[in-house]
Amino acid sequence: MSPPNNLRRQLILNATLTIIKSIPEWTTWHIAELVKVPKSIVYHYFGSKPELTRAAWAHYMKSARDACDIAVDLSMWVAMRADAELARMVRAHREDERAFLKIEFDGALEAWLAQALHVGLGVMRESGVEVNEQEIKKLFKELVFENHIRNRSPEMKAGVEEALST
Image (tube, rainbow, N blue to C red; front, side, top):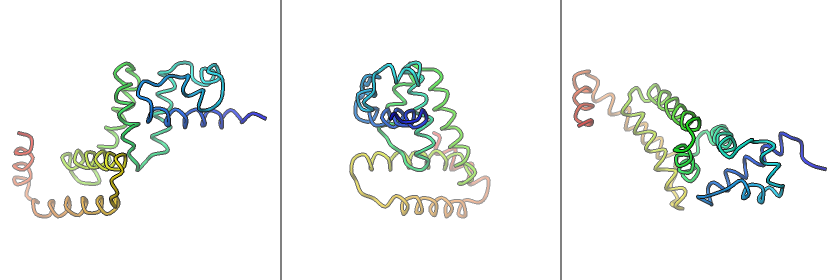
């Protein structure tokens, strides 16, 4: 008995993320081979490789809310050079993430730094470096808020942001 449509679609998306992380120049044939279905089944669910890539990005964003998988992120950044719709999706997600972080950290500069920390932790995870990510994120928040308290005056904050931008 074959799996229901939703399950097969999920299997294809999971396989796509697995392949994207391990084969830089992947094809739909790689996906079909991993799922053990004919390539035509992949195209039945996803009309083209760009459509599959965009669906994989959306699936990754839903399933990896707090985890940064640098291999998937890098693959998506490469793929978005040839796919304007994927580029729009990735950039929109990053902007939404940054908007949330601006609120959480009360500043644009801190939001950029939080995103950089997120990527850095992803690189460390991919490299096999063991760190306590929750502790590092907690320390980052403490340092940001300590800095906000120290630099409460608008003039002080404007001077710091101006110095960092030059």
